[in-house]
Picture 1 (cartoon, rainbow, N blue to C red):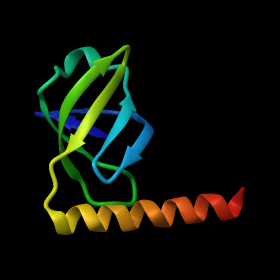
Picture 2 (cartoon, one colour):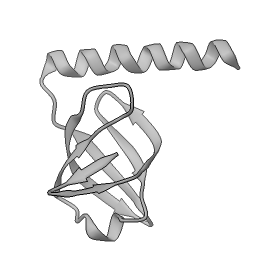
Picture 3 (cartoon, helix red, strand yellow):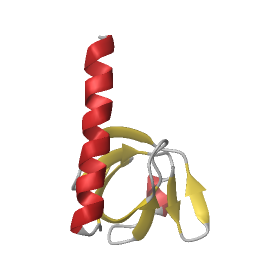
Amino acid sequence: TLRSGSKQYACVVLDISPGGAAVWTEASGEVPEGAAVLFEPQGHAAAPAEVVRLSGGVLGLMFLLEADARRELAQWLGGLRDAYSSTG
């Protein structure tokens, strides 16, 4: 989920790293480049982010996280990667 102001948008994560994410959403035209958003991945704490790129429905997000939160996100992503690779 992506929140911008009081609005909430469903999104599909195309790529994610501790530094940011590329997400697709039908509402990309409503969220301008430079906007502050809150990225809420299922199973993890929300991450504040800035929209740094827009391209055809895809938003490029840069996470605005302190070092500890960035490490925590990296560990969470590593766990997802390990779980995914053990099932495939």
